[in-house]
Amino acid sequence: MTVSNTLRGDISPVLAFLKETLGFMFPACCAVCGKLADADDRFSQYDDFCRTYNGGPSGLHICGKCLSSLAPHSPDRRWMFCLSDPYEGDQLPGLPLYMPLAYDGTAKRAVPAVKFGKKPKLANFMGCLLGTCLKSDDVHADLMVPVPLSDARLKERGFNQAEEIARPAAAILGIPYAGDVLLRTRNTNRQTELRGKSARISNVTGAFGTSEDWDIKGLNVIVVDDVATTGFTLHEAALALYEAGASKVLCASFAGNRQALNPEVY
Image (cartoon, rainbow, N blue to C red; front, side):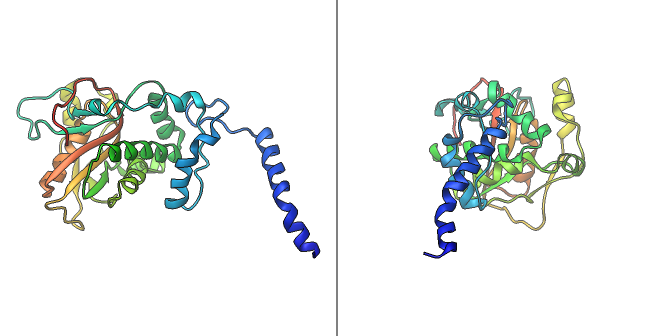
């Protein structure tokens, strides 16, 4: 056996020692709560997905407490009306919203961690959860599109969280992802900063259009955002898709604060 072969044969224990040493010196912290993560072995399925679609492991860590609390609603509680407060004259009455998790606990901490902590990998994980739920409920579509950010918000954040959620969700469903179908036609204020239904409606009314590079006539489309609160943003995005000729639109969000159920599924 040559010296090089000997070194090659002994390298695995060395790497294992280095990994253990570095893990002790620089322990992984939970991407949600920031505490030490203790759930590396629970990400095997997610990391398999990352290796297939992203070319490598996620490098994401979530502690067992946060991970265990990300429990989706039962299937019969995932279907909502898109608008939390319907109004007379709505062009899309009964627009369906698919929302697998409640916006509380870990989910409520995870969303701002993605947006303001700049953690797109956490958004990818959220997309995997959303896609897995959609697939388990046998939801089908021809295309998945994210709600777009304004140019200013995109420059500030560096990524669109809805894109980072929609991309892996589409891959799990086995349908095309199209990040450039929907366009922002004007900048809007953050919906969370506005009070009152009329202010939120006017803030996003006519805020979206569709690209001329796409022909979505006759297609069933899923439009994705991170959180659904009032539902006005998803509603206006769906309206733009219908105006472009979509046959059917399903709104989907990772989480939301909704209680009233939609008796009819997508």
